[in-house]
Image (cartoon, rainbow, N blue to C red; front, top):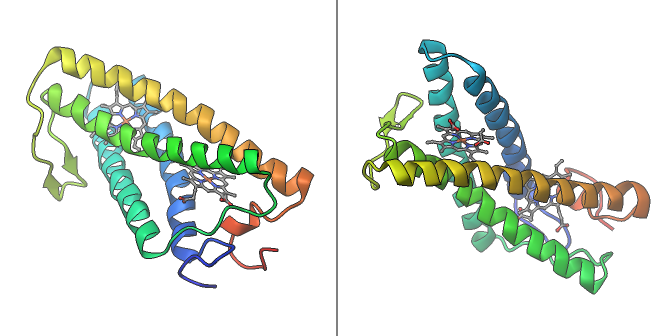
Length: 184
Ligand code: HEM
Ligand code: HEM
């Protein structure tokens, strides 16, 4: 399988970044749910620390993903899609990218404005570019939550469309993002 994208399918690097991000999002969500359920104490702080470290990893992953699109341009839109579907898929992808950036950035601002440091896996701390501010912390916390709701709606539509194409329309759309096999 090609590392790079080809004319009609995604290569190994784009696939790894795509499915890796899905796994990371599920982990971030599960950790966020358990950390919010715990009473204040060392266990809670450990989980929050893990959530922040993985969240920063997600930011690095989306930066790598955008960078890779410059190195290896995305394949042409799937030929099986109508012009309207192609346009809708394109808009959905752009909105997903905006959310992939918004989630860690609002997380960063929330922590910094709240006066909490961000240590990445105990290796290094991120610089504070924000400064403490109660109002900004509240705003970023709200934005973090709203962006998450948007992600769930957008990913729901995106995944439903991919599964519809695979199982109902029986075209190549999902296979373009899966290892092996010819795309057409
Ligand atoms: C793509 C990356 C991220 C995802 C998918 C994610 C996801 C979530 C989710 C689902 C929640 C649950 C509560 C809610 O609905 O807001 C949450 C809460 C939280 N996240 Fe993230 N997060 C990410 C990145 C970050 C980063 C980078 C930080 C900080 C450096 C962070 C800090 C927090 C904190 C402190 C909370 C608890 C907020 C509260 O008390 O309401 N997150 N995150
Ligand atoms: C079960 C979950 C998912 C399924 C079944 C799925 C399926 C797919 C498929 C089949 C493609 C290729 C579409 C094409 O031919 O152009 C694709 C591309 C894409 N997906 Fe997903 N996806 C899922 C989750 C996610 C998540 C969680 C995100 C981000 C939050 C995401 C963001 C994207 C983006 C931005 C593209 C455009 C290609 C790129 O730049 O990497 N997907 N997805």
